[in-house]
Length: 382
Image (cartoon, rainbow, N blue to C red; front, top):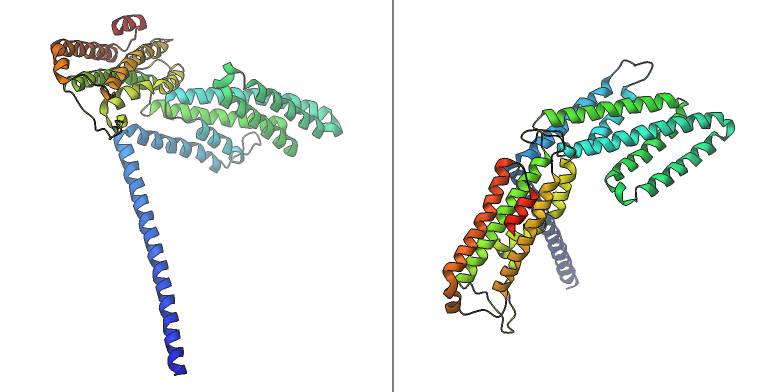
C-alpha cells in the first residue's frame, strides 16, 4: 500500500515537472517566433523604405565609401615630419561621421560649424599652452582655469537666440579644446597636437564634400521646391473632396448620444491639408540647408531666393485652414438637408473646381519655372 502511494506521488511529481518544462518550452518558442516575425517585419519595412526613396540607399553607400577612404589612413606606415599619421587618423574618421549629412546643405553647415569650432579651439589651445608652459609649476592650474573659462563662455554664448544654428560648433569647440590641452599636456607637444588634428579634420571634411557632391548629390533646395509644389496639389485635392462630400451628402455614423464616431484621420481629405499645415518645421529645416548650397541645376544664381518658398507656403497654409473649416462643416452634427444643398450645386462645383484649378496651376508654374514670386502667388491665392 505504501509503495503504491509512493509510486503514484512520484508519478504526479514527474507529470508536474513535465508540464512545467512543456510550458517553458512553449513560452520560449512563442518568444522566438515573435522575435523572428519582428525581424522579418523590420526587414520588410527597411526594404520598402529603400524602394520608395532610393536616395536613402545612395546616402548609405556614400557614407560607407567616405568612411572607407579616411579609414585607409590607419595603414599609413610612414611618418610625416616625425608625426605618426595613423595614430591620429581617428580625427578624420570622426569628422566624416559627424559631418556627413543626407543633403549637401546639411553637410556644408556641419562642416562650417566643425571647421570654425576646431580652428578657434586650436588657436586658443595654442595660446593657453604657451601660457601654461611659462607658468612652470603652475601649469596644471593654468590648464584647469583655461578649461573653466572656455567652457563657461562657450556654454553661455550658445544660449543666445541668434547662436542657435551654431550650437554644434560650440560643442565641437569645447570638445576639441579640452582634448588638445589634455593631449598636449601628456605628450608635451602642444604644437604637434594642434597642427595634426587640424590637418586631419580638413582631410575628413574634404572627403565628405567630395563624395557628397560628386556622387549622386542630394539637394535640400530641390526637396524644398518639390515640397511646396506637393502642398499645392494636396490643398487642391482636399478642396475638391470637401465640395464633393458636401454635394453628395456624405453622412457619418453617430452614436445614440449624438456624438460623431467618425475619425478624421481616416480621411484622405484630412491627411491632405494636415500634411500642409504640419510642413512648416520641415520647410524651415530645408530652407536652412538650402541657403548653404552652391548654385546647381536650374538654381544657378547666387543668393537664390529660397526664403520665397517659405513665404508662399505660409500663404498656402491659410488656404489649408479654410479647407479645414469646410471639412469641419461636413463633420458637424447639424447638417443641411440634401435638397437644399442641391439648389446651388452647379455654382458650388464650379467654384470648387476653379479654386482647385488655380492651386494646381500655381504648383505647376512653380515646378516648371523653379522661381517663386510670393506677391504674385499670394494675390492669386487670395
